[in-house]
Image (cartoon, rainbow, N blue to C red; front, side, top):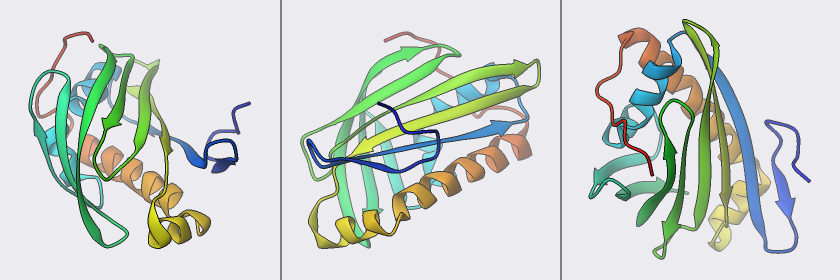
Length: 164
C-alpha cells in the first residue's frame, strides 16, 4: 500500500524508506521534462549533488555529499518516456536507491512534477537523518529549487528525447 504523497514511510520488510513529493512548475510539460533529462545540470538545483557525468544514454555517474560524506555511485536509467517519466536505479556502490519522476500536464503552461524515491539508509548518520525526516525535506527543497531554476530560465538548457 502506497502512503499519501509527501509522506515518509518505512517498509519494515526490507528497511527501505520511500519519499513522495511533487511541485507545480509554470512551464509546459515538454520544457520541464527536457530540463530533467539534463542530468549534468542537477547540481544547480539539488543540494548535495556535486557532479553528474552522463556516461551513456542510460548510465550516469554521481558524486554527492550524503550526511556530510562524499559518495560516488552509478545510476542506470531504467525507463524514459518523453514528456511522461524517467525512472532509475543505482548499481552497486555506496548508495542504494531507485526512483521515478513523472510529468503531468496541467495546462499548456503548467506541469506537475512528481518524484518518488526509495532508498536504503546506510550507517548511523543516514539512519538518524532518516528518522529526523531530512531526506524528505531535502527532496522538497530540491523540487522547489528545480521550480525556481526552470521558471527563472523559462526554457530548458537542453533535451534528450530518446526512449528507454
